[in-house]
Length: 607
Image (cartoon, one colour):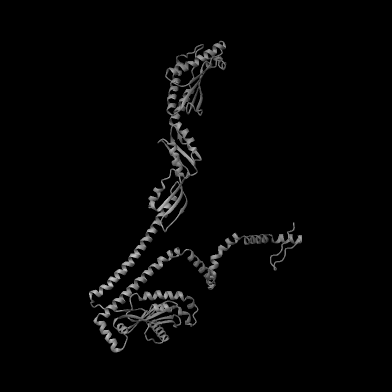
């Protein structure tokens, strides 16, 4: 059958052939390729399949594109910024909570350093204003015409970072340069060339082929500290002795500057205008510290800054402590409630519907379903460390099908004896093993099947030891044969012993059946041979059946007995022996669960 012609979706796609021969030839030659193309088209037309295929190579495609240039960053950057700004406007508290562990210590450290510097300046001003040294320095400033601050600096300066250079490692060119205010500087390029020459000299003469680098250089009162990286390095000119942690500060600042100028360093061609962004970082390295005067001060002068510091520290510490306590209390309540909800979710007999959380106030509302056999929800939450003031419970009853509760529910209903074990399998089958009274066994099956969660009951390994005795007694009675003489309703001496033994067995059967909750009933059929007339044979068979009933009642038995005289209706089978085998009685014993029940436990025919 020729294929229908399809309209091409693009101008460059030819139409399908319409001639039957070409269509048949196309099918024979390219049937597999056509099927593969149709499968590919179906996957491309299915958005879910196309998305699944794209997800397999999306990560590799992004990594490959990102390795070529920064076009991917330029495209995704605005979208990420817009999404973050939108999230910040919608969830400012969440962003603040995420940034608090990072920004909080920085803010506290900045405030502490500001207070410390303010107090030191305040104390220094008081000290210089009311001391002989301060007056002497003021006189020196007036005599020399130099500013008082410069005179103080000359006498109190411990160290000062006067210049900071950011130098390209490969070319030795200055990328950025910062100078402390009031410091006279030399040509920055000359300093860079000097450092490069000294570095090369040290490497050639002393390194011995190793990659050791120059880390510091001492020139009189000045120290040049160098911190290097493969792309660039920092060089700081320090007057005096730099502090011990200054190199760590330079290393941190260098890492920050390298990260900020990574693109400019990779494409560096001698243009240092791209590195002006690092000037603020270089300015942060231009620090200084003055020497403290260790001379004694008046007590009241010392007391003022100490009291001010104590008040400020106390106020700041009290606010921080109160804020920390509030946050800790809220976090602790939130954690306790999470633990309590998880414990309630894992507790057998509970199904959580909804949890309304209010972490700000620390009060939660829990909606759940509870089985009647489950532990109280308040107990579960208390064991998890949750106080009653932190939650409100809304509980609805239901029946749980969890195996532990199903087994507990069945045990409460069955109340098994100590000799029986009850366990519930994963497939809902209740297995009862051991020994138990027959009455309990029969009632247990019906009770267990009526419980929710029980699919069937396995009692193959559950027995009543007295039931075996019942079957043994029934079998013994069934094997007894009592024969009667011709024309007599009383058996002979030997047969009388057999009849007495059968009566004793019936008495024991009655007693044992009563112990296990059973009832015994007896039907006696009397028989006669064909000798004599029918009327006499019926009377004689009736009298033979009454003989057993009379002996049974004489022993105090209450077994209900039904007597039937059958006459010679079944005679003739042993006439060759004089009809002895037909002169007999038949017994039918029936065991039931209760006198009013019709469930027959055992029914047998005994002679």
